[in-house]
Image (cartoon, rainbow, N blue to C red; front, side):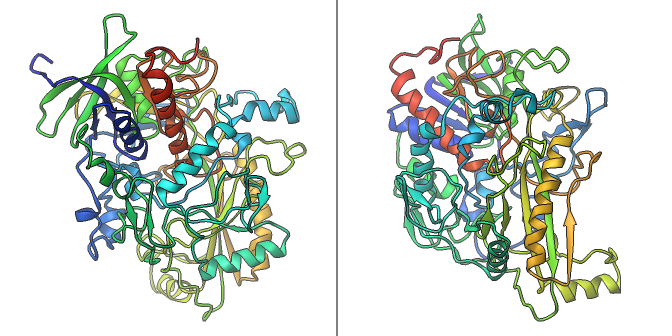
Length: 593
């Protein structure tokens, strides 16, 4: 644009200010660099976005999506197969991308998990244990290129930054508590003791033990007590109000970039945050091998160029792929030839839910809850069970997570209940206080024909092509989910309810964007050790433009069973360490192509 205003050059420009952008800003300002962070949405914080009592408003925050992406300005298109016509995602439904300072990290629930070591080396692990022919045709799983041992110190530090509540099983090789027996060895305990266990989760724990499983109290980034993190940021103890997912926490109890990092960044002179700054592209030099900065548009429609020596793409999940495609970084993926990398290996999650209905007077009090609290089992996650005779790749953790059942979107009723009328009202009244539910939170593998690219028809508010998803459920993941759900039904039956309702995928089902599932997309700018199958090297550095790094769940080359935040943030600290200790001393490709 001829009227673009050129800003003074800085050392680093960060695109997107959620968890990963905030971590990068803190790490790189500590290195003495001048950092500018650009967030396309408005400025948000606990005040005024999370003040009591106005934040306890399900209609405004969840149903009308106050903290979610504005679909009128930019959205996505979807199709189930390469021969289909894609249509726009016009209304928040299956997933809820955030917008504004804090991103989805402001409205997330607080579920905080580490990845299993096997999932970081998925292809190698399955090939070694089950043989290369066990992996189905068309499944494009690959290794991350980094090991659990390398990431463990960063998992530990993330938990300390987040003020994570939990109980370890093994620390430095010694069994120290009744945590998750399947979890890999830890270097330290959680910074806070585990959350209290609500009644419904205690019923789940008792039944899981009765059928021979290994339940444990889940890790929660809803603080179990007062806490000050390594950056000096303070948290208050969670009061189980039940307004976590979709809301800013009024009590400073739920970890967020706004609570756990921003107060420290405000103290440093070499950091600047600009809200309402929509980045259009990463600018490249004439040879296309070096980034010179970014171009963005503010809320008034004015165009700016922000020169920088280093660009960090930290947008939400799949949006990094769109930014790379719009900027001409990396070769776009072609599902027909299988060549190209940008947009490849998109993954979601394979969910199922089991609801149990009990007699009147059980009084499960579902309005009491917190986003990360509850009891989980890992017996069927990752490769904690023998896949050999089962014939599928992947697994699923399961958890009873009393997060706080809301009066609009969370009214459980038994199978056969009418959708309206007097009988529906009676069912709501009879069952609201007498219900327990748990989720099977399955991994979704990656496939040759599931990817993202730029839509040839639809554009956003700024005239740029929307990102197009080509994605559908596959038999492997449905088979996995149905197996694990069937095994978990033993837990439901052990609780002796009056009736059980199961919501799960059937073979032949297509992705349905109308009902909420999870916001956990991954992939599109996959990391790896082979540039022919990855966009980024093991340090999250672009193979093609070495002064561009990308962070977030978009770097995952495969889907995982757990929520992505714990892994995405640990990988961000891993990349930041490489930048500080290697790249800044010698700005070059950190891995030979």
